[in-house]
Length: 193
Image 1: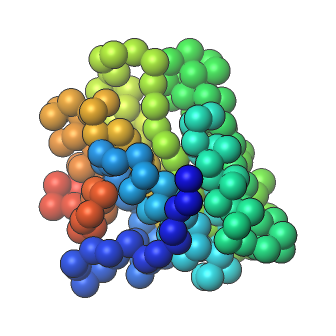
Image 2 (image 1 turned 135 degrees about the horizontal axis):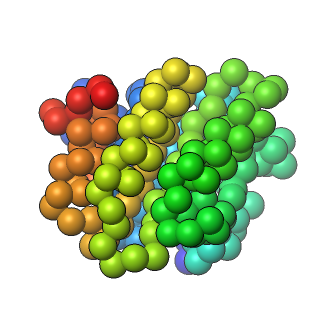
């Protein structure tokens, strides 16, 4: 599988490549487009001199590693860290907010010691068929505070088919940007809590 690293094509005055600070909710349909957008995010971060932390599913990590090998030098790859999202979302029980936040803060701070700018991309998953909206709200509102306090760029990616309409609305309220496979915009529902 070959993933072309190209800028995300979005008809907006702002796009993911033009912002350096913000909390982005990405609802994706197409796995291939998802991976293209992830690689574009990494490319923009490396071009900007950022450290890039990727929190990803085990099934996607080998594909991402292949693309990183193709497109980035060893020096550039030293600024990219990939961690298994299982450690975040399942290791301490399904969607344990306290454990997830501890992992995120630790990885972001440790990885950021030598460079003032960092961007993160997280493929958010859970084991249950019906995730608790209150747990998700607590997690995402805390992440929103952390992202904005640290002045970083963070994408939270959710598979479209895993999100109920209620969760979709909640996520749009907790992220200042909303992205799909083919659009990017400021969230009209964002409410700073």
